[in-house]
Image (cartoon, rainbow, N blue to C red; front, side, top):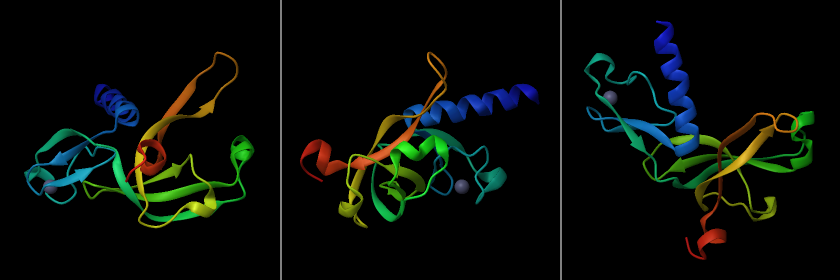
Length: 140
Ligand code: ZN
């Protein structure tokens, strides 16, 4: 049982770094982060790893102007519900854009940014954030 727990934690870390989720072959639903069991099919579900392309659009967003101490340097920042092209939605910070320029439906892509740093030479956590595709590639 304990070993299974470790495997699950590792899966979550792997998914954060590489955009790996999974897909249920029975009902064709995508999950990010990966689910251990398909909530629709349960025992009939067959889950396989799937690496998301990291492309999607902003489904909804809010601009955060108040933040806990650790995040104060970053305010105001944008937190959005991103709808991936595969149909899955997730919550992520949007970077590399002014809050006034963010729009619903804007094309975004995943990028990796430092989220939190613990002291000098300490643990650095990375996570997925999104930035406008237009800013990076010049087209949507
Ligand atoms: Zn399923």
